[in-house]
Length: 490
Image (cartoon, rainbow, N blue to C red; front, side, top):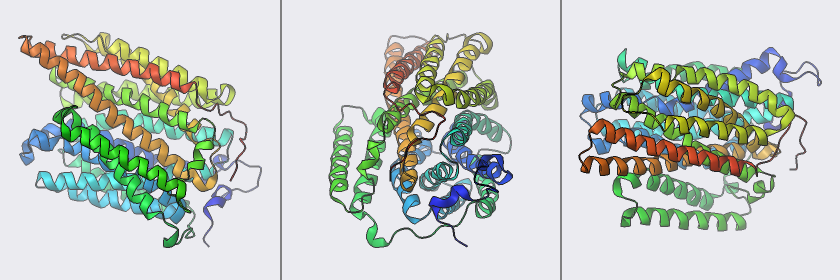
């Protein structure tokens, strides 16, 4: 029997008073949803260490190589809003299954790729699959576990897994690249999807079709998706093309025009893709902006420290990946503590404190020397960042979903993840330009290559630290969700 999405929070309960999370089915459901989150977040980082091997094996140019990670980011961020709304309208399990199949098939094609074009095309498709999977899974979580302590615990685990996956992806990429080869950073996805799909059908209730085609906001879908795609594309290509070039400026102007047209369309549409009323939820907009700015700073850390370890310190891929393992442990511990603390303090102190702690860690890492060592120059900063990262993930995820009507849970999840992806693209674009400009200036002055690279990385990491201070200030405007049940309006 099909069960309405809005009623999934009751599935598996022996009595109304017994929390679903305390049941075996509830625990398995949360485990499944976290596995989906892990798969999506890992995909964003697992290929980075494999890039040199991909380039040599497929004879890819440097310009083509940058699109292996960027293609995923482009479609992931561009289609996220549409994916979240489709989950609300067509059914969350249906969209989750579709996204899982797309990721599995595209990863299989990418693993067998014999050219740059096939590999980049597979990564584009992977991003579309992830844009369907992630908001569907997060909205299933927020509509399955009741608002209050139960949902805070579930969101804390989800956010912790997301933070862990960002770091674990680097480690797995190193292990697979040095072991069976770079193709296995893609082949692991079909295996994971084959395990996830049966669990989805076993644990997630079926959907009823919730919208007719006539109810779809076609114009809004085209304008919104087009605007997001163009914005992320402009951010990804700006460092190479130049921020002041006509092409880059045209990209940003075009994205702005499409997004403005999208907002106007949403105000007039009887069935908007993005009901603007969702922004009446207190603190939701601030939570998303906080996540955007925080992600801009945090993703830069992984990117530049990986380059520093491999290009300056001479670490192998597996050594580079292993260097992040303590950070994984710290994120897990911080996420667990934060999910408990916010039931007493609310999400706002957790977000602000986490951003400031992560900022302090990034500032420490911005002092890395040319002849640095792992124990004295990397590990202390990584551990400090890990505690802040875990808190920010938990606090922002909880704040951005608190008080959202059940019928718009997929949309809220998509807004959060889209803001994080745009933040990632924004951070890499800005910080890469800062690092490259400074390094090239030093190289022109005949500085040694390792010194020029390191000083460029230092400046980028310092800027990331400043971004996290800004995220803490914006975090003061987020809603302060506690463990008590929040009022919802439909």
